[in-house]
Image 1 (cartoon, one colour):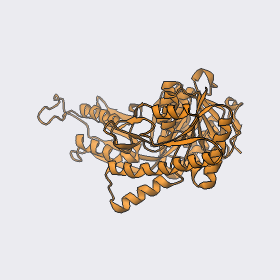
Image 2 (image 1 turned 30 degrees about the vertical axis):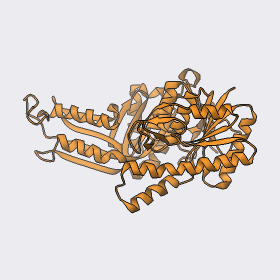
Image 3 (image 1 turned 90 degrees about the horizontal axis):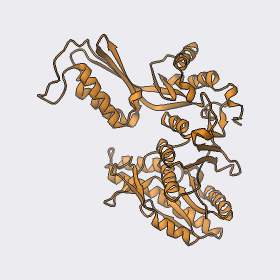
Length: 427
């Protein structure tokens, strides 16, 4: 029998009325003869409320204890959804992440799924039950509860779809698909009916919040089709995330905005040292060697090498520039200061009032796109602090106060052309 995984986010289960709406969607899918696994997030803003509660007790809560607390949000959701399904005459059973066999590493509050052993879910499906699984959480090999970070329920859903060999993973949210940019921020955004895993991964990694980046990475690796759908328009098929050869060849498929960034610029004095790296304290002497070590350490934190700029003056590196998620800013600062203490002419500038704006698509590989993007922003009198490129994207850092103007300018420049003939205008 065909299997389907359906995931519902916090906005979809925010109260009893919405939970009943979710139950009706699941009920209708089950009538089609499929085995259904439902993955749910915590209700509404429950996770944020629990974090605030933890910080009211201890402003630096222990990560393990924080995971123990945060995991309770999904446990409320799964039990209520199971009850709502039972009221509609369906057999349903709820499972925590641990009970569903979600095994993770030991990185509390941002764990990665190592493997899925869904034997209890399989048994439930064979009994004709709908399995309702808590997203966002798992268990270590030593039976400690972990959480997967923001958007982790998406990853739970895709991981279960892969392990259960489901035909598709439907992810329901409050928008009806993937748009060329956030339609709530720019009304002229256009919906994409199909997008490749690679483009969706790049958009998600660069700030588009419709899908968690880890979930798309996993879907790409396991070739799990994802459909982005709206809980409030269940008849709409949304956007299909699939293989590159099955998706249209958009030159630029979208504009992503990320305001959760901190910008770093470390300026170095001209380096006249030609000595070999010192072995006395384990730290290299030559600035170029130090800079390369900094890049390695930043990548270990999770930054992309493509998004760290090293500027040179002759043969010496004179500036290191990058931006990172706010949650990583303290660790990033510590890395810089470990290798380049604030003396001998070094100068560190840190700015948290910034936004990263990006264009994504296969056309971003073309050299002129970088120049076109810079020119478009400058034509709108938007200062550009940093520009980086990857295989299918170009990104720039701009002052946060210009973020809306930047989205509008880049969307009108790159996403209003004939390449979107099959895209549906936002309504």
